[in-house]
Length: 204
Image 1 (tube, rainbow, N blue to C red):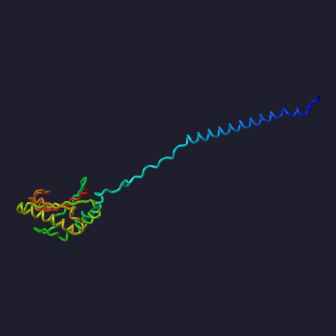
Image 2 (image 1 turned 180 degrees about the horizontal axis):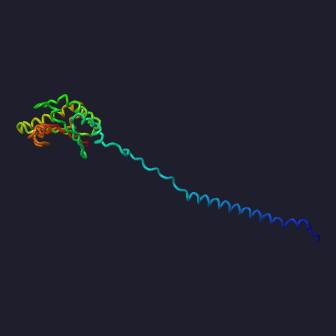
Image 3 (image 1 turned 90 degrees about the vertical axis):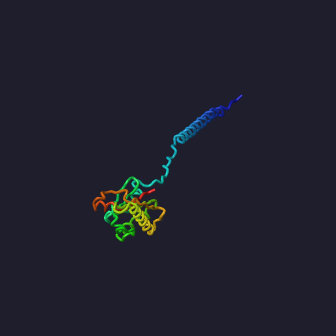
């Protein structure tokens, strides 16, 4: 019986080819697995985007308060002979009686009108502001007369400012007569200081 040795010589190469293909497949599988793990790791460590801070509607730092705006509006009053004092929540404007009214009169004099015009303008510019007008007299004459005169003068000031467009509901008038002196009524200078109108401006 004869054997074909040439055909048998080619048979051993087939297992080697299969082994090479198997190794190549295993390497490809390993590379794919490694790439997948790397991608998953990158997704897991990715930081979420930072949230932007919430918008605020607060006023800018250093913005002037309503009271400061009033004071700025009334800065020129002192050059007109009035006195302006500031407290924590109000401005006190003192107008000499001789500037505002003639003796025994409750009619606002022209000499006081420019100052009162400025106060009306300031109250219009700073809407939350309110005004209390307080009339004062010296001790000359009777107490009842002085009380009535101080009230009438305070009401005259309120009426004048209301005539400039300020709502009367934002203003009040009262009289103190001779009950709240700031100087000695024994001297002419003291009595002149006591005859005055005080305008108290506040911001609600």
